[in-house]
Length: 161
Length: 195
Image (cartoon, rainbow over all chains, first blue to last red; front, side, top):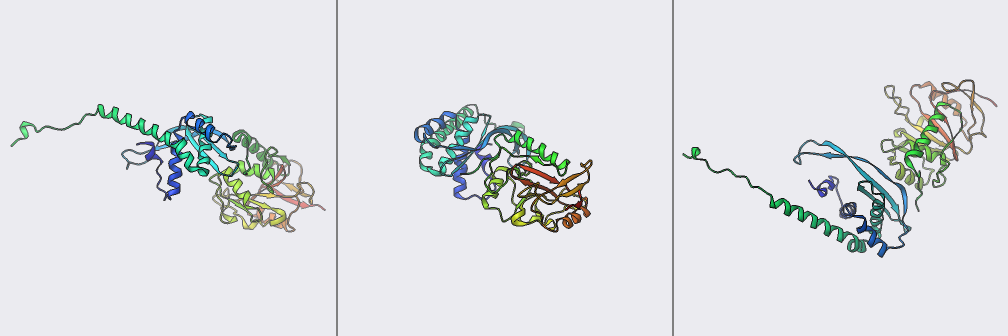
């Protein structure tokens, strides 16, 4: 199961919700420099401030086997949450795995900027992250494919009529 | 611009909880609370501290209509508490004594099996010391304690007697003014209103 599957929700979702969900999912998996550099270059004076202190905590991960098994608690993961507000009023939220507070804050700032300048954030921030993630997924698939074993059963003599 | 809440939510809410517990265990004692907060007006600092500390996503919060929407947004954003549709569905309620008065019967009293499912009312007063002195007795009061909240409705004595009569059901009250609070739990009786 990939992170994208986990992020999909049974709640009815409008195109805006889906777009925001995609942006936040990409920001959650960004590296710090992938956020810091474009934000420093394009929005050097974004003026975002923390609405809530950046906090690290645990969330329970739920799993199910085979996609239709009963849900169970898989274990807890450390997440860091940041909530910021721009001077123009947009709020940005980010939850990222781990305890990297500066990255969480940058992801929240990018989320808030996305609500104001969606086009620029798409091209400057989100597109490079999506490209890197797609490349990593392709590499993993290629490595897996190279070691794949196809099982099949030969017709055995005693079964022949 | 939205207002911020506790700068250090874990420790500051623990400290506020400790003070609210002290107020609850010593009815009539005025306790300082929420002095570092800057909630949007007209929300008192102690009211903000109490609700940010006690309310969460499992406790529906009812806010009297006299408060502006900004108060509801502030408390919902920082505490995560859902808004209760009616006062008798609320775990916590916020009222302004000057603008809304106080009618204890409107709130949830809990059930005989679950007396904890009642409403804790955070009532914003203009003063905790300038009102008519009511003498208190009950658990947590060794000799005597007094309550001098202002303004209180004229029939508060009778309302509180009815609340006492329903024990163990009944509401609990937290009166707040600026950065101070005083509690009146359901176990406390008002024995006389002197003067």
